Image (cartoon, rainbow, N blue to C red; front, side, top):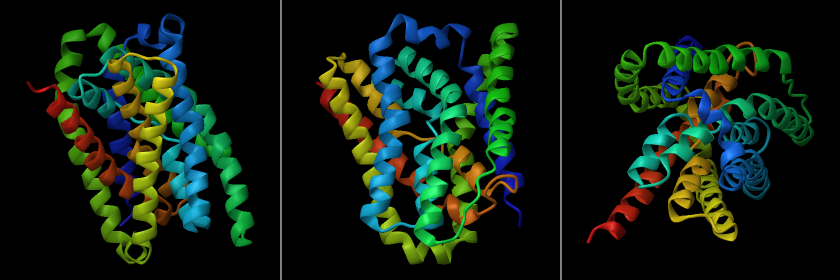
Length: 286
């Protein structure tokens, strides 16, 4: 079963859903609120890949599995992070703006980081791992950027219809992601079971350390409580569907095993962040 024909439509649908939540004004947040935006973008674009690389070394992940962990660290979360920010009583407007900005910025930073990672992974294994940067850019433009822009235009032209469609698609996002995870788990269960202890711990540590680092940065820069909660979620929540699509795409890596860290991340991310949201709600309950 060629799962790429399931992955790519799901990713496109999720990115279209993200576009339906955005407005052109969301992309100007850096000018209006530079401090929280820059702190969050630092966490997403610089801190996460560095943590993934360090954890790969410490946990002894090499080759494809190291690239898989780096890949999920380079794919910032989609519209689900906005829902989690709302549940955590965070700054939803900031969350939406960060989702918009990071989705565009990582179109360019992701190929750079992954090109560096493939060179390192090839050096570790002694086998050259090729990254077709041009194909990666084209796939991201078609499956990430274009659906976001179409969703944004639909919302601008038909706002009422866009809201109804967004409500429906947002309810589908989590089941679709779990469907992807389930399909890949069945296909690669032998590899997953062989490396589950190291990969599971690596992914869990990546989520906890990135969220903790984001919280620390937010405190250092004296951000508000609502901004801190939002940044923890934005940095801790990655776009597993995008990582799976890049790993399994026949035009890029064409390796389903590389998607395994993203599959485990999708599961652990929801467990950890739902626990975080539950903790916040328990504190705010009289």
